[in-house]
Length: 187
Image (tube, rainbow, N blue to C red; front, side):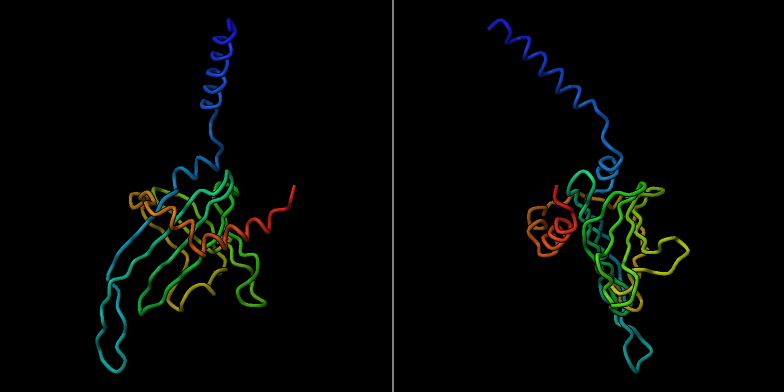
């Protein structure tokens, strides 16, 4: 019994050492960008045969959920003029300071696979499918004619995801998780 205090003190010191260990760059980035970002705005449809448009409420939504120490789940829904949208989801891996989603197969046979980079720059969450930045869009198949996955939204729009259990139960999340597990070699 006289060693109980010694073991307890050792356990406390070990716990403190673990807590004091700095998080990896991937985990630090996850902590900064995880959440839901929403931007509501008025958009419009062109009314055929008339010189007017019909307005409607549109909303961009970006969800980022930590999955493991190297991956985040990302789902993007962006609205554009005339009802065009972009929509994509999947697991993105931390690479060179950003999270990168790589489509396992091109959505259109013969096209290059979609590569979407997600990160933070100058106080904004940034998305881009132009890799390198002066190249063409790699994820155009996920967007309508007026849509693009080159997107920025202020970090001040970030909110906690209050519906996390529902999100993790969604078909999109399960599909993304299953695709990641299938692509990861067994140890």
